Image (cartoon, one colour):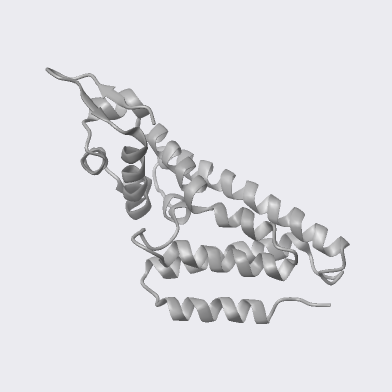
Length: 202
């Protein structure tokens, strides 16, 4: 991993950009884009503001890089879900993968995308639009997967793949909000079980 040297008086300060970016990701995940101040970010990253600008660009550029890292390291379960042999398997893997990220380990509870998509200023709207565009790409992949399942006879003809994908996405987002609010994992698991029990079958 490339080491960034920040311009500073005296001896340049060196740091690992990947480690610093992971720290920024956690701040954005907990606080959202607007809620994360530059002071909080630089403190968590262990760098100065000049170092941040020199290595990552401005706050918006840093957030986009953090979002890339989030998708790479935290949302890999989405592709695993899409690779499931059945449509119900897709839903099962997607919901349980989301729950694991939203409530597991030392990561903040909830979903970074849901937290970041809520903003009031014009600048935050640009960030929200970025998050929504990325989510739309994932939703399109899910629609295509369900369309394939329907052609293969894995879903009833009367089920609309786009509506089904929208439903699943809404459940995942709702789980994220509840996880962020501290709802026990057991209750969210019950929600998943109920969703799968209601899954359309031929």
